[in-house]
Amino acid sequence: MNDTALETLLRRDRAVVAASLFVIAAAAWAYVLWLATHMAVPQDAGTDMTGMAMSGMDMGAAMAPAFQAWSPADFAFTFAMWAVMMVGMMTPSVAPMLLLYAGVGRKARASGQPIASTMWFFGGYLLVWTAFSIAATAAQWLLARLALLDPAMAADSRVLGGLILIAAGLYQWTPIKGVCLRQCQAPIAFLANRGGFRSAPLGALRLGIDHGAYCLGCCWALMALLFVGGVMNVLWIAGIAFLVLLEKVAPAGQLIARVSGALMAAVGAWFLVGAF
Image 1 (cartoon, rainbow, N blue to C red):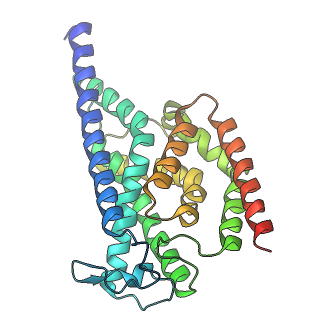
Image 2 (image 1 turned 120 degrees about the vertical axis):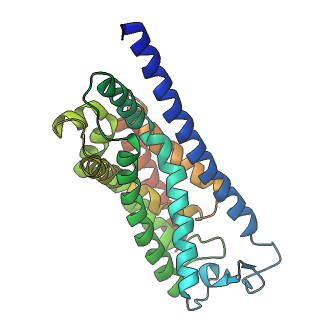
Image 3 (image 1 turned 90 degrees about the vertical axis):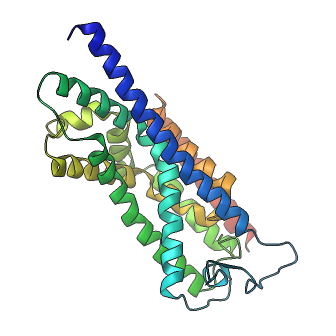
């Protein structure tokens, strides 16, 4: 196979992966938009959410300020909501790594030394964010139990909102944030430090888990901001997703993280001052 033909195959393989990622992210965002529309709180509804039901489930259990006991279906629905939302938010930022993986994979197959499918790596990455979704669901349950969420699933207290903003802002300046962000910004360096790609599916899965763990270490505090602007506030979700993407792909990603962190802390302090 000549170089021109190989390069054509590489471009085609990357195009297939890019299209697949676009479809996955678009489907996740479509679900989030649909869910946000159906869970929207009427202006005259006050805190009475008992009339909102979907698929036989009392949505008030997940949204009302006054805590109602969650059934297993409530927990499962809320977990699914978080998991799909994480797919929509994090797929764009992992795309450069997956496109690199796909290109190297095609070249490796052409040379007779194939590596495991890109989907194994992506699956490991998504496993990490699925685990995070369980923790986020538990956090939402706890905040609802303590009556600290309003009907839009945002902090029902300027004090709580301010504390979350300050904590997230300060985390943006921590060494662990910097280390994790550097790993996410440099896919080639990340792979080189771990011995490169894997030929065995489970090896690729573990590699994806490792990469997902660094991305989680980089972004978990930003995800906590969903409890400030509202878990189903689509513009807020999109803004956080854009910040995550910008930190990872922009040359000044580290600076963006610190500037945004300073702004978060400042707004959080303003919230606290306004609460008293």
